[in-house]
Amino acid sequence: KNEVEQSPQNLTAQEGEFITINCSYSVGISALHWLQQHPGGGIVSLFMLSSGKKKHGRLIATINIQEKHSSLHITASHPRDSAVYICAVDRDDKIIFGKGTRLHILP
Amino acid sequence: DGGITQSPKYLFRKEGQNVTLSCEQNLNHDAMYWYRQDPGQGLRLIYYSQIVNDFQKGDIAEGYSVSREKKESFPLTVTSAQKNPTAFYLCASSIRTYSYEQYFGPGTRLTVT
Image (cartoon, rainbow over all chains, first blue to last red; front, side, top):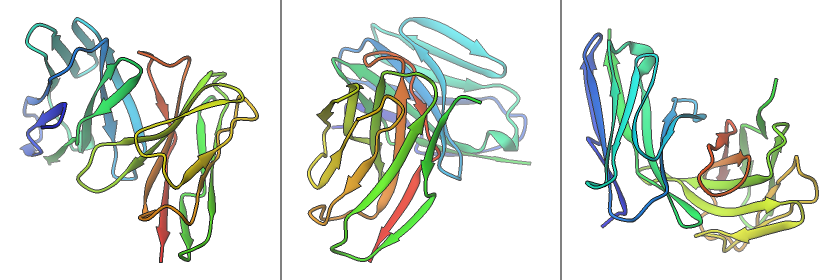
């Protein structure tokens, strides 16, 4: 079993929909990251959080340490949000990455 | 503009040849990383460096080598010993290791035939 599991693997939605991507992990962590990878391959860090909730524009990330679960929400989704969203956790001296969720927003 | 650059974007090599991928950062970060990404898999750590003249093996270091002679530069050599070198390679940096935000370069897609 992977230490970091994301769901769904693929998600297609209409523009304007509220999007939720989930991340579950099975190990103790010091922080969790949400990353965005565009079709060209470059990766951008969206959030790093260790508790509670963070918001940036239309993006919201939450984490529940007790339940070992995090969610990334996108409000008022737009085609430019189409990308792969990657969850990663800091454990000891390494980062463990999930396989990513491929999001496609239709206009 | 601060950031991380990787070159080239696409690289083609014949089997049996060593190839070096470039990674440069002007963010004044101490830590630098090399990851490999294969279809359907999460990023995997090849090597990382916490400080100049120091580097540590990651999960899949076999067939790769690195150097860290300058703070700004962390080149990765894919040697002929690497069994499946065709992949997308990403370089990243952070202020320090352990729970700091990582900044990624645009990546190099290596194809070995």
